[in-house]
Length: 202
Length: 219
Picture (cartoon, each protein chain N blue to C red):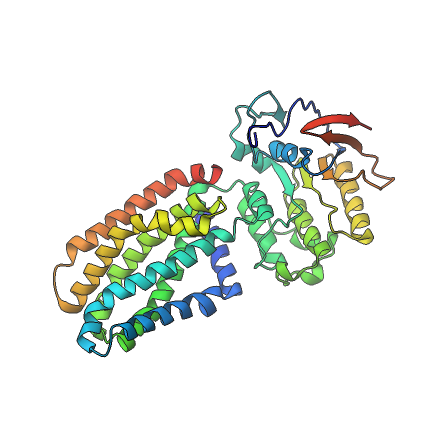
């Protein structure tokens, strides 16, 4: 609820593995709220739902959050840590081995930037650092809040290629965006949102 | 819990070392505040020494408020907050880690301020050194209480101004106990009862933080 109005209402959504779903809508349509609900960042006040087999009404949200990957458009890491320090922190926090750090950095094309402080990265590089954080985690459910914001065409192409790989490996990916994806290869399911509801699908 | 605490403390200290806010902003602010306090007392050296413990803790509390706000500001940018939340870190470990990093930053600042009080406020060196154990405990308690209150106020829009309003009443007994034990170390007098207050406060705030930090984070 926000100011007495429900953030989401009448949302009926089912996701399957190896899928890419794009939530499209104007500001305030409810895209980010839906992503935050799926991530366990906000609770369910009414209705029912489950994410990765966990009941949203009863789940310990901390347990749910550990199972999903989140990438926000604002940046998803500590600005005063270097690229490798950020990733090392995330890996250690999750109890994951660090041996694939170099591979992940190479995949997101940040090998040469491993000792660069995050706040000195460009917008595209910051987004790739966020992706590296997720690649290190390999979550089953990826939730990306406006990941294309302030990316140039090269950045978008890079992002699309990586999302394609992730989906092919079996992950569920949900992306929020103002406009439908331009990529012809990804063929996502596009849900149009307005006023906290899903009002159309293509 | 200890693993998470070490991880979080290491991260917070690394962020602080890299940003150098403590070194170039907080410590100089504390030194200037101590210097101005000395000037305000006038040229009477005996008066300086008598007022030194109180002034030291007054400056420490101002410095602590800056460090606490900063410690929580690291976590509260929208994207970082959400991403860190999806790491599912044990809140008790996060609390202990943040409190430990805060305590270390306060101890380092106190070292500079104690040297400053010897030079500017003319406190006796042996008495100042005798006060160090009680200062370590009192600042540890301020760090644990500050971490708790920092989490309480960091979510809102007015966190920076709300923090002193809420935390100063909690700091008051610690400041009194710290000031009394520092005075006793300088000029003679009972130490034990003031130590007990600081130790009990440290234990209480540690227990409260371990139990409640997760609830505060969620709210």
